[in-house]
Image 1 (cartoon, rainbow, N blue to C red):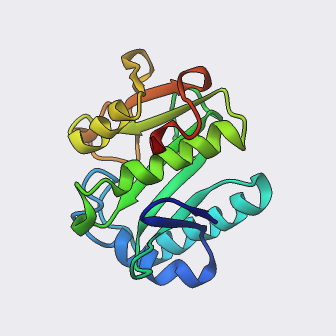
Image 2: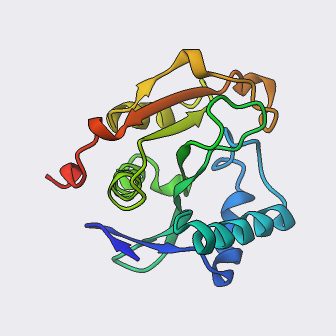
Length: 184
C-alpha cells in the first residue's frame, strides 16, 4: 500500500473485480482504450494484475480516495507487451481514472508515485507510456511528468481502432526522475 496526500494505492484483489469491471464498461472512460470492455475480459485483466503483483512485485494499483475510500481508478506498472510494439519488455506506466475525477490531479498524483516506485523500488532504467494521439489529456500528463515524446517508437496497436493509431509513445529515463520530487 502507498499513500499520497489524497489517495491510497493498493494492489488489486479479487474483491476489486466489480468496480474495475464497472469502470471498464464506461464508454467515456474507455474512449481511447479500445472501447467498453466485457465483464469476462475485465476479470481476466484483474486476474493478470494479481498474478503480476505476486510474480514480479509490481502491477497496477487500485486508486482509492482517502476522504471517503471510493475507488476511482487504476495506475501502475507492467511490462510493455502490446502486439507489434516497439521496446517489448520495458516498464510501462498506465492509468485509468473515473470520468468524474478527470482534471483534478488524481492521475498525476498516482502516476508520480508510480514512477517513484518504478525507479526507487523496481530499479527500472526507463519507463514508457503509450496513448492515442487524440487523447490530449493523457499525453499532456506524460509531458507534465517530464516524459519525452518518441515518434520513432510509435506503432500500430491492434487493440485500438484505426483513429487511435498510430499509438504514440513517451519515455522517461531514471536519471531524469528525482524520486519524491513531485511532493515538493
